[in-house]
Amino acid sequence: MNPNPADKVERWPIEKLVPYARNSRTHSSEQVAQIAASIREWGWTTPVLVDEDGLIIAGHGRTLAAHHLQMTEVPVMVANGWSDAKKRAYVIADNKLAMNAGWDEQMLALELTELQGLGFGMDLIGFSKDEIAALMPKDPDDDSADTSKYTKKIDAPIYQPTGDCPLTEALYDSAKYTQLTAQIHQNNDLAPEVKEFLLLAATRHISFDFEQIAEFYAHADPDTQQLMEDSALVIIDFDKAISGGYVKLSQAIGKIYASEKGGDQ
Image (tube, rainbow, N blue to C red; front, side, top):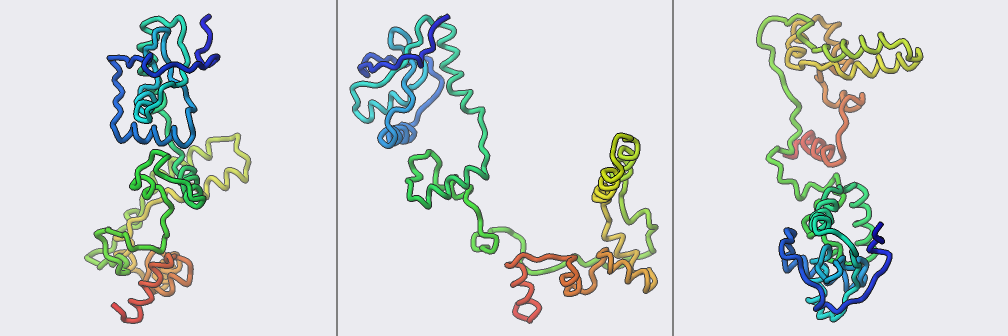
């Protein structure tokens, strides 16, 4: 079994390193400058991987950065005894495997925010200013950058009765709810309290057709109308709906609603 290249790190003259002519990974001058800045900040953290003759297998960008920094020696690891196919495959794998990783964007944003607070230069990390700005937490009350085509006016949907009173089965779609409850009832391994909880949760899958509900409300008797209002199926009094907890407004939207209500439009 061949030894692991990382078992021994050597320092070689940079002129001994030979780029692989068929390397498909490209390095822009901007990226090379970024790698050079990284080496200046942290030093060499990953040696260049070469074969016995100095052919670069992994580390083309780092080698270019070393030239950019006018370095005369670089740390290398030697892949002794690798076949030609193994070397060629790793040239690709070294780049592609790293690209297959993802980001926990919430954790990344937290780290970037704290690093900014510590005064660390964000240009060393590799993200562009636009990428960092997109990751930063947004102030929910700051609508200065809102380019949405939608108005900020508080307009609740208004449905006008158009004709006959619809049948109650036209007011909602319970197909998903029926499917879920059947599955829950058929599962005899569920504890009674768990089954009760899941049955309650399944009601979230009942979808309501509020246009049909408005039509039904217009034809209903006063007692039914009141019950529909109490159930928040229709909102006649917006203030009442807010105070009853049926409608919740963010601080920013609440300010707009208050100003509109006061006539400041």
